[in-house]
Amino acid sequence: MSSKNNHRRDGQIPQPCSHLADFRSRNGHKPFRALQECLRAKPLGRAAIRRDPDEVPRCSACSHSATHRLYACVACASVFCHSSQSSHAAIHAESITPGHEIAVDVDRAELFCCACGDQVYDRDFDAAVVLAQTAASTLGGSTLPPVPPPENLRKRRRVDYRPWTPDPRERFLMGRGSSPLQIGDEDPSCLPWGLRGLNNLGNTCFMNSVLQALLHTPPLRNYFLSDRHNRYLCQQKNAAGHDISNKKNLRPCLACEMDAIFSAVFSGDRRPYSPANFLYSWWLHAANLASYQQQDAHEFFISMLDGIHEKVEKDQFKPQRQGSGDCCIAHRVFSGILRSDVTCTACGFTSTTYDPCVDISLDLEPNQKGSAKIASSKSLHACNGERDSCGISTLVGCLDRYTRPERLGSDQKFFCQQCQVRQESLKQMSIRKLPLVFCFHIKRFEHSVTRNMSKKVDRYLQFPFSLDMAPFLSSSILRSRFGNRIFAFDDDEPDTSNELSSEFELFAVVTHTGRLDAGHYVTYLRLSNQWYKCDDAWITQVSENIVRAAQGYMMFYVQKMLYYKASEKLLSS
Image (cartoon, rainbow, N blue to C red):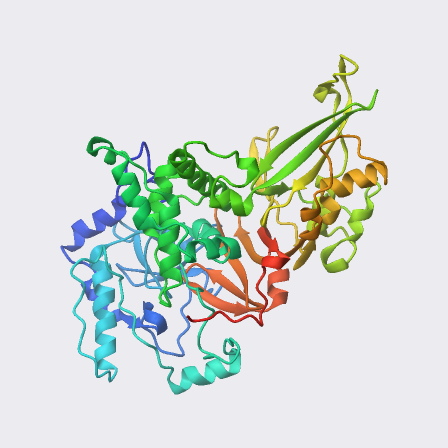
């Protein structure tokens, strides 16, 4: 669906693309059946535009072949490029008489509206892809009987999966340019258990990137795979607790949808999975974000956890506070407690407050080589033990700035209970309780009030694979403030469990590339001590250097005692 013209408003389903409807009205009942001969089947059930092996498609306007995505006009077969910065495909559609707005992705065989700048869906086009896939499987020497096209394409995949066997040329290319995935002594052709691509449902890379991280969060994964939340029992419980008149108004349970995704991803099926039911359920929980536009991955993460918490809170007669971390599985895994100390500069009186959190949003360090401030000793704990230098921002440096005392301005004076007047003060943040899984969100999107514009901060951030959170705990900061003396407050006894579990391991990185209004999210997962790039439906193995060079937007760390090492085997039983 078009993201520019077909937003979801007032809970209504967006209307189909008007340009696609005009194209269908001009070209008959089945305008895409002629494309069947132009399609070819690729490995793993994917399809693409048929061309010679040595042919390299290029844009008819700029002759570029790999810079941007290429689209072939359905009306005249001309190939043009499209990106968020420039679009020769859109120029082609505008410069010619109506009828050239619809094009086909050369590499993925997906419909694209050049006027709307977004993917579109057509049932007849999917039928043509299915027929092309079926013909390729039967003409290629397969002994299997031909598979008829699905009766209901809305509920079936566009192509049926068939095992792929490389030909000599593909085998040579794989041997020269890639290495097989290894999982101990098992079949080297298999990916780690539970690693499965997620189809993009139209600008949903923000959702897929976060879901990939959550699907491989060890405590969350163990909770759902051990059937701690059974969606069938939950649905029966909800149906029994509401009368018939209110059943239509019931919103789906996000925890049930997560249980369904876990079951599908860890079923052993390697075909990309489409989380359409989850997307629809999330739309009902977050109506203000329900559209085919690109959304913020961090905002999706927060709203998703709130949706799970909201459902559990309604089912409990005496709900626990979020800060306790026991109210639901979302807060049990991600919830921590922040401590805020505001100290009066006149008398030294300190006001302390505690707030629950499911993540920490960090500002990037100033882009300068030197600083007038004297950094605290914690700045020595840079990425993997390296010191901040050359103006490079590090995650530990950002945490150091986050927990460093900050002088509040004259317009932020607080009322001192001891002085009985408003005084200038110092504010310092610290971490009172560590969660099982820490999510760090990097503030890469800035908004200028004076200029009334937003921009993205593309500055590089260095992040460690192993992180010690001990220097940022409240107990450590109070100890550095008061030395070995008795703490000034009765409720500030050091939490020994925090100090014992302060070491964390990185297992997922969500990255964002592109501009503020048009970008793409990708997740890097660390499984069995190997890194994998999850780009929607495509899963590839990558090196550590690629992960370190990525533009991190959200980093997920799990307590080291819960992190599964590469030597540990998952039992098939």
